[in-house]
Length: 285
Image 1: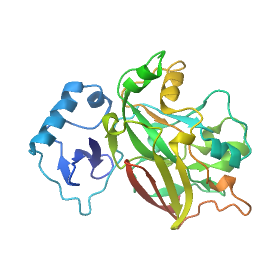
Image 2 (image 1 turned 90 degrees about the vertical axis):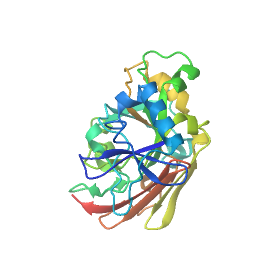
Image 3 (image 1 turned 90 degrees about the horizontal axis):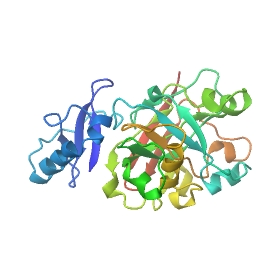
Image 4 (image 1 turned 45 degrees about the vertical axis):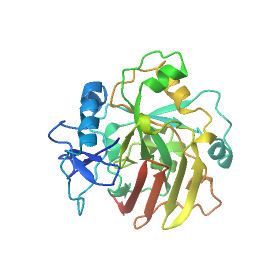
């Protein structure tokens, strides 16, 4: 299923995109698309049954904002330096273990919402990523099979980053990762049954119409199952948590001088195969 949330910020309603591309209202069945829903197999089965029976009312998508496909997000866990090509382009050593950092849940916005370039920023960068959405509480998972069984679905994520603040201002990466609007998510949460192999997905990103990133999840250093298993050793993952799994080569930081960092007025578009497409116009904060 392709689950999503539509409407004004803070007042989104749950919806489903059916096989014909028609937007369907889920408000009569569920309150929201969130962790409690993803952990409730019977509720998900009711949605599937209603969709199959053709009884869900259609929504007029014209002019309707698409919000983040997940509400009440618990935490956003991120994996850095997780593509061979990206590590090579910035001259970084291949990490022996996954590089883990956190983004605040309030950085998450809709897939087409405005992204704000922070005041004083000179190195705002783009990163298309595959996001994992957790559907079952995960603690100390031992096998890849267990890890994948705890995944509810996948989504497109844009891990926007301010490189000067991330790398040159001391401390951890947090300062360059947690600015407002720095994690557009969606348009859909695609349930795991529609993504049989998360290591077989292409990822692309354009800036002002120019293709910048053209990668594939097969280039991940630590694949999806290993990432979930690894993270579950260090923190408990709950339904509604998200893991951003890293970005392929092609970011501004990895390009020759003068590096083409993002500025107000730029337009970024990105997609992950089968998971939908985003488009953001950048403005000054």
